[in-house]
Amino acid sequence: MNSDRQPPAWAAGVCTGLHAAGSRHVLYVPDNPLSHVLAILHETFRDVKTMIATREEEAFGIAAGLYLGGARPTVMLQSSGLGNSLNALTSLLLPYQIPVLVIVSMRGDAGEWNAAQVPMGRAVAPICEAIGLSPATAETPETTEALVQLVGRTAFSTRRPGICRLPRRLTAPAARPKPPA
Amino acid sequence: MTSLDAIREVVRAASAAPIVASLGHPAYDLYAAGDRPSNFYTWGSMGLASSIGLGLAVAQPHLRVYVIDGDGSLLMNLGSLATIGWTRPANLVLVVLDNEQYGTTGGQDTATAHGADLAGAASAMGFAAAVAVQSADALSRMLDRTAREPGPWMIVAKVGAAAPTAKPPLDCVFIKQRFMAAIGCAEPATAGAGHDED
Image 1 (cartoon, rainbow over the protein chains, first blue to last red):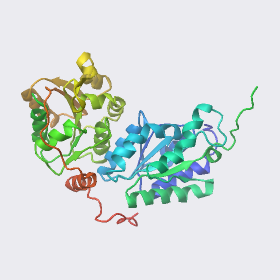
Image 2 (spheres, chains in turn yellow, orange):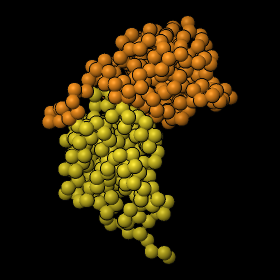
Image 3 (cartoon, rainbow over the protein chains, first blue to last red):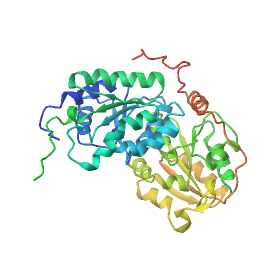
Image 4 (tube, chains in turn yellow, green):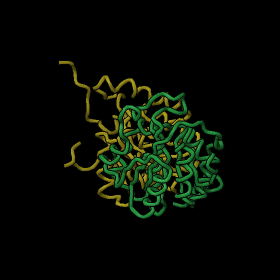
């Protein structure tokens, strides 16, 4: 990340959107683009508590406990961690109707340079669909806040996890796959 | 001490406070010890009972939160000990029923049968107190201490293998809604209510 630069507009949109959806707790496993979101939360949204988890499934477990205690939790993860999360999603959050706002920083989509990220990145949408969840995608910095807020409010109203993907073309538009040497 | 003996001590110490139970024998025995609305029975998500308890303890710092985990379950999510040790919720009491086997699935050995020390791991990860007890009396005395001394606590109760005699309600949403109402966090009667409150 380039911490000396102006925070990116999409990251500010994620923060404002999750706050407007009523979320004051963010569980996460870190990722490079998400570090921008965390920096803004720590700087500007002092009423939002953040907690790091050792793996993504644990983050969903903590989020479920927060919800049982009356909170509206957000989980942020890289797409590579969705596989780690499936047991929590399918055997805790879905059957108990426990809602969480889920922010997925995408890897393996357009602009990817690392082959190890591609299979899971491609599988995010079909896996979500297979368990009955339809991921939304933030397409532009200007629309990110409204979309995150909408996904969050829908999740907490309908008591289902709500997933918002942040594609690489949004979070890392300058990144380009390197041509072979 | 059997698992049921140990759980009866936890229920006595908890009074009306919330108890989160790991799936399988811990949840079955918690139900057998006496159903109560502030019991959260999990039916899946093996390993996550301590994480659910952590989230609840953070959301409701004025409540003392009890978790009944198993040795096999906790071994699936040892990272949880690091997160609890870091965040140090004073109101979290993690009771591990350690029968040194995967009791719900046929009695295969867990690593605790071969030297793994869960209380030692919790202590090393920053729990305020972590002990192992061998008897219901010792467990009872230690649970009384959790009411006076801040946590996070881990109490490993070494229990013998025994088959549970009852199963909790199967309706997950019923379990959740009854639990949330009992601890003062009732969900609105209809999904969507409260949508415009913020």
